[in-house]
Image (tube, rainbow, N blue to C red; front, side, top):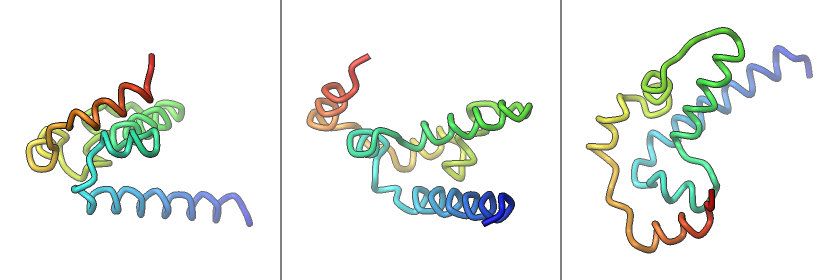
Length: 97
């Protein structure tokens, strides 16, 4: 496979992942962190970092909007729920800094 095709396939997979995360508003970021070790915010930070590596400046809010499909504050108001004690406990136990 040539590099151009590989890059196109990777971009398509990224777009599908973002679409899936936008559709699954029932899945909270803390659940993603507890199960997979990353969340929508991580993905937006990786996007911003990749842009910066290529000399493109993207703000955190702009990168989050790319991933969330709307401003982050709007997504939080519409879809984010208060984390349960159990979710918070799993997060704290699995993410020692």
